[in-house]
Length: 239
Image (cartoon, rainbow, N blue to C red; front, side):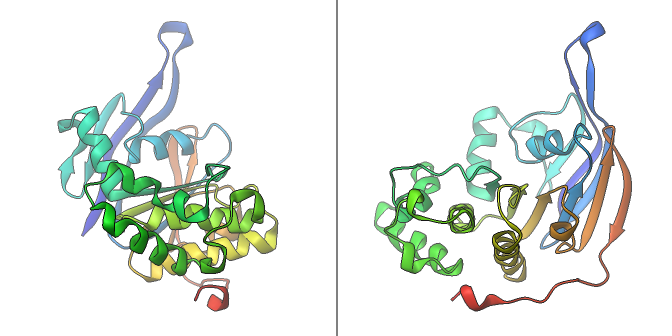
């Protein structure tokens, strides 16, 4: 079953001579439980597509169905609630609160949920355990490596058990070893049943996906399946 379906999606910024087309008419479907990588050069429309799929922006025209429902039927407030409940986000810059513990950082999405306060610690601790950071639970970001910071961000994205997790260049600030560990953690989330949409320019991270969508000039240039994963899972660091 499709989780995401977009039809002839367009996004135009500016007007008149200043008009810029970021998305020029994209149609695609993403199934529940699928792992998709979106690639393309700077200016290809990757970030714009992510923002629209993640309810952070609206298209200029076209249709977007999420879990069978037309997102255009929702108000901005309704989309914000849906985004918090159904979506998790992992960003290149981690976006952690600097003087706050790992536990408190992971609990942040719960503030905007309707989950009882008494359940917050258990949910956050479970998410932290899934990324192998229980031994760092009371540390602050300044005491963590780059890879550990990103794994905290993964736990935060996971804490509400979202339908889909968006990962926007999650290894962009990391060395290859740390980046590999982060991608293993994301791949494990996919194994556990989460839909993953990865925005990347790195071939080795895209190889973790089942399908790669290549954008150019706001259009889909190529779609290809990843028939053979060029990787070997090592979940030793994920307890």
